[in-house]
Image (cartoon, rainbow, N blue to C red):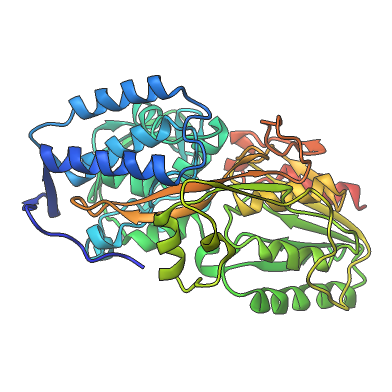
Length: 456
């Protein structure tokens, strides 16, 4: 539940296309202090990947850079710089800031193109709306005068975690990062065509924030989907781990009944667009694929805090075991022993299973990939996932008191199903296939093509 926005001692100054909010330096420093104390209270180990002395020194530099007044969007970038130091890709400002920008999000200010990144280059994807007048494959040189290469480099540095995940994340949330950098509609694009001609597109209209996200992450609206390819491979785009397990089970029933009706012997589960959600849906999926005992996670070490207890209660979890432990202690659970699935189904698939993974396979999606590989539930094809097998989890969501910026900070450290506490690697595919930028721009899918070739 979100707290009521605190307007006290807050400036509202109209700037550009929307009412920009400003903080005084005192208010900004108070919020940074509040964040730091919350981090110490709720995070399992904020200094796992960075020494506390270095973190504190960098935090002081960020504080010293705060001017007498600072726009909330600029303050958010300071928060990103701070949280990126932790290398905990779950801990950062929330991607949706409804209290701050609820009305602004409805305005047509946000970047409308679907893009592909190749290191520090940005290309217009074939999935972009052709009526916008930019040919697929065009390389964007600048947006509203901001050089794309330097913008991407600066934005990657705002995200913690694995390098390839940062690139995938920024590409999908490009409209968000452009917005907080002051790059809003109408857009002027300088770009290079596939023939090498440099052109300029002016007055490109924007879209609402939600529409911009649906351009880059259509699964947010469309949800999971399935189809049969070439009458021999059942394909499930498992991109969304929200919603109830009952709804997901109904979806899977439809998929696997359709596959059985066509005598399908091979299934590809696509996790490339799965950035997580409710891991219980992974258990539901596995109930259709195997009778083996398994675990999606080995053990969990969970920091106990009064803040997270209040958060659980506010969200209706009044009987959670977490509430029984003393503040400041660590609750350790799990013993790495494989367990029977809590879900059962009569619609069991007995053919060959493939999982397609990539750098945006993250959080609970990463757990599915890790469980599938550890217990040999299928063959993993594609690129390494976007997160280490052993990583932070269980996000605490809270609001900073002056700026009202919503923050995410993790509270636990989870050991993957391999139960190797020293493992710092993402989930590695059994068959490594990395599509080139040319593949993607030509609409090719070498991972899926490999699976189709194997099923001939």
